[in-house]
Length: 319
Image (cartoon, rainbow, N blue to C red):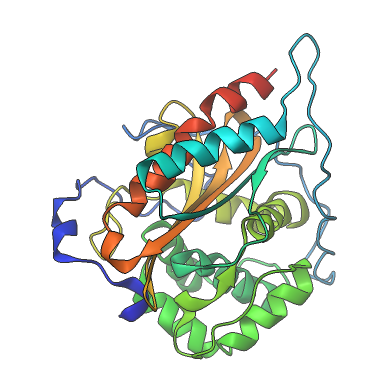
């Protein structure tokens, strides 16, 4: 597929065990590239009072732009952090376009943001919107076990075949339009070619909004199901690609629940690492990059460098 071109050279990727977690248990959260897992539900995810008879909850408000200043810790200067992260990413590939945003769910602040409103092709990150579309159509109640298994596999293993089927069944581009309206997204757009779901346009800022919606607005069973699938991502995706670039390899000593994206859109190679990171999944981290298609194998390292450059910031902002 054009949207998920994987060059023959990607046969060098490392294989790792994956497997599907039971959809009936609490999320299993990865804790590094060595795949050490935690079995407890993240404590900071609030319980929801929503039920299957209530309408879909309103989207969260736009992230504030104040700076987090925990007691007895120096202030995080978002501009300084953003400049450092951008410099680190461009040192790997100067011709790359980069965009990122880091949001602290505990303090309600943006810790770093650069080109957060720049559009990138979503690649497999759009599978989050596909899953939300399926769940919204069921008024946020968990669907039957077969559908849960499909959603889990689509998110954790990044299964394209399942995404193709669900995309077509839910109206394709119309699904994206519905999610834009429901979540209040500002830079997300459906693809020009209705069949190319990977060409959906997203922004780092909008992806922060998506994760905030999942953690803060959804009913607890639905939220836990999605976080469980995202935290169960194996190193080797369904198409054989190593999906541990970005957050897993760049932040190897913390918990995460991720949705990654990779592929080509037109003449561009695009890589995206997005997810919930840290103790109690406190942070939303979104790192996006694109470059010419002949740089396909170099762009994952750009995203990993960006995630790695955020390590000190996340530690500084922690209590």
